[in-house]
Image (cartoon, rainbow over all chains, first blue to last red):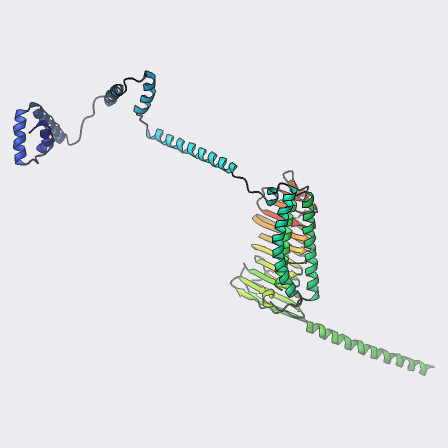
Length: 239
Length: 257
């Protein structure tokens, strides 16, 4: 048996779970090898201490000083390893990058919470700013008259809308004409008079728009008047 | 001489008696004819405090008033040719659809309604032609729509939703704007007058191409005048209710109550 196998079987030995054959070979090796015997003795004493105190240990006299010493030792070993790994680097370069990559930080819970909150705020602000930027890149929805920058284009948009409305108006008008013969003369007069008033309102708006194609109020009024006309035709077509 | 005078008088009396009898008979015929051309209907319906009345008329005047009783009384005068209608009561609602009940008949005479109902009712009134008067209603909603011509008078109204629209005719509103309420008034040719308490608070959008928009004491520097005075937008007070007024060929006037 060699030392490696001996140290592998050491835990089983101390737990008392080794087979008879393995224990015999291990005992033979321990009688011959002083270092393995010392390891067995150390482990045996540690286990004995643990069993005796059942997990209750006295704190070291100066716990903080102990941890500082441990940290200094670990950092010293890390620096040594880093210096061996990159012997040709300049002092300045190695100092910044290695400090950055090999450095470790310890934060309290409050510091961690504050850091996370700061990251969330920054990411949110960046996202909002980004979305606004994208929004500015997308052209805003404009009214048909706004889209039509020249008077000719405006006239085209208006004519287009008027022709669409005119189709609907023609359809309802045809229905009205079908039923109109059944109405009494008073109702016919009323309908004609009201249609005429709405047409006048439409013409007023069109006249204003021909003077000022970008007049939003006239555009609104034109739309409203066309809707009024459609509503009148629809409602009288029911008669 | 005396005998001749008596004879003359008796002759005149005979002519007068004949004329009188003829006139009387004509009046009798006329009154019988008039009675035959007009029908009166009156019906009562039990109702709770929160009633919803829906009335779709073809032609004629609609008068709606509140009263103290928990019932609805529908009185109607039907001109010849008389329209048919059968009110339907559904839950808290009463529906009178003259339009639907006479579809396809074409020519029906005016139906003039007078309806009395609890003050906390909501009313939705429509007619193709004729005036609409609503008085002292304090329910959730008041809607009065005249498709063509007819005046609309809404007095003593306190509802959170009010809509009044016609093509030719005046619109008069006398009432209060409720917090968070919505009020729309629209006419093509007629004057729109709104009479409200001085402490009313609302957001106003008023448009009249005639530029006849008079806000009186409700005008303030915060108002925005658009299109050379054809449209006015602004808040009165905290702007807690929304008011939209559109008049194509008439005026818009606000009065303090």
